[in-house]
Length: 342
Image (cartoon, rainbow, N blue to C red):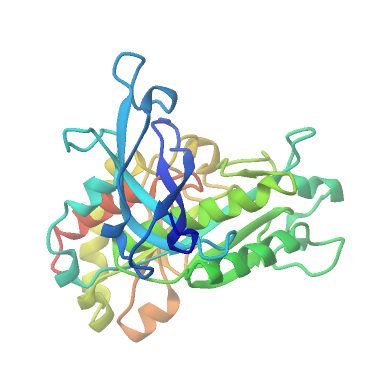
């Protein structure tokens, strides 16, 4: 076989872990007749679902179906293949939450745009404490968007992450150090829901890979330290109509719907949210729904600029850092469907 026609494919999927799906991956070298092959050119592959919480010893064979590809930033001319998990009969596996989001009809015609604000905390594997606590922090406000060795921990990791995302063709809109030292955030560029969620998972894969070589733990714990801000994944969402007109009446109608569905939304906002969403440290109390213009202590924030201009988006501040974006978006979009904003 001509080595020039072989591609290194990294098959990536979500396992059956119930708290937060873990990323899994394995490598395959595939003969490629068309070097510019699309998703359909990547063959399906099987794996041991009994070792990933997606099967058992007697029924372990599961199939990986490629649904989106990215250039591999770690290997020249390699491909990252994001996959869905199915049975060999073709049915979707229960852990395949992506299929729930993709089953929502007419998303393209609604013009839904989504951007995530993913926070992560760098944790020292020696003592499992946030890496930033090597600075012996006292007042957390010193570290937000901090500069300098005594105010910032881990910038070199985010610099490497930024470059790797660029090589993978993923557009990152912003990066900043967060309130707790050793905690960082990146903002994804807004896209239609499936691509936005796929890109977020691939960003998580990339930063996990970078963490392997440091070594350090990339933590999505909603509350890494009791006295400091927790870690969220604020979800910004809009429809085509909202980007054209989203006045006070529209805002009030949508917020009333979200309030009625609050208990359902909270179910997918991340395990451990009760430790983060206490009403303190820039959070709302998870037991009740609140909203406001420019209010970072609310469940859902209407940005001040949106209120002033009468068009734009909402920021759902409830999702924790460890969310499954497929589930969060499925829940949010199901509520937005009840409004007149589609």
